[in-house]
Image 1 (cartoon, rainbow, N blue to C red):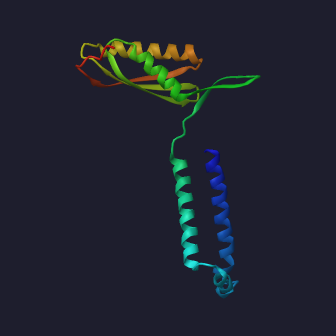
Image 2 (image 1 turned 90 degrees about the vertical axis):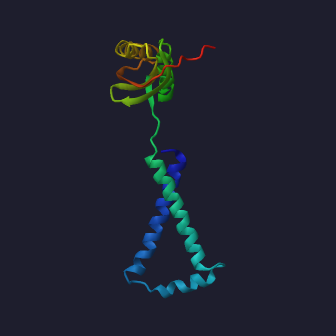
Image 3 (image 1 turned 90 degrees about the horizontal axis):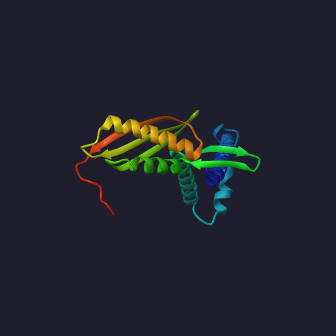
Amino acid sequence: MQPFDRGLLFVYTLALTICFLTAIPFLAGWLDWSLLAPLYNQLPVRPEIVLIFFLGLLILMGARLFWANIKPARKHVIVHEGAMGQVRVALTAMEDLAAKVVAQNSGVHDVRARVLALPQGVGISVQATVTPDTQIPDLSKAIQEQVKEKILAVTGIAVQQVHVFVNSISARKPRVE
């Protein structure tokens, strides 16, 4: 959760707690609702407008916090931790590296890679489009070995699994520039 969202959560929780603590004596019957009449009369605008504004603000804050909670957070993997601090690699950087390694194979074009952080290292899922003359079992084995070796060599992170998914066999050749 980002610092903004943490601050928003604090304000949201504080506002709801104050509302609930204020409402308890009235809802329990310990205080009479007529005690609030002088407060309503002092407001420069109608009380309904203030209440609608306040409830709308709480709904917007709740929606933002809900979105921040369900949105998957991109993680970083700690590569090295030394006296000077941590060295971290973003998962997107490893995705780009894996995609470049796969794209270097002949017969492969249009590559997408996805990296997932695992407890013992990372897992990589590669989606590729290949040409019809490609031997898919041989190519996929080569891709798995190349990606595993390159990620380990560049980042020092162990690759636990490499899934290769051929999503299309395309007859068109990639452009040569």
